[in-house]
Length: 127
Image (cartoon, rainbow, N blue to C red):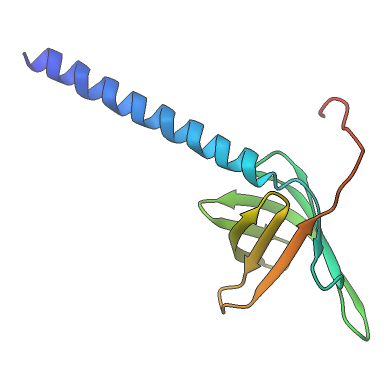
């Protein structure tokens, strides 16, 4: 009896882990983070390259006086998009509105609305 119970619990845990992994993959596919995201105010963009949950980024913010460009690595964990550069790390809460529209919220509550730029370029192969 204890052996059957152990096997049953093990199967339940395996099924639970697989379903969570599938749900996470579906969520990442729905978000479709890689690509060029344009700030709603058209004062900058966020370019995410790589896989569905991590890769490299380039962020450009245009102020009235200057243009600031940052680059580094990104990864998505839970509901946070983490941008890491050589000088530091910033986390943003991702709010999904619909396909191609997300909001990135700073820890202080400031949100920036991004729209995914349409492109007709299809990547061929991965490196």
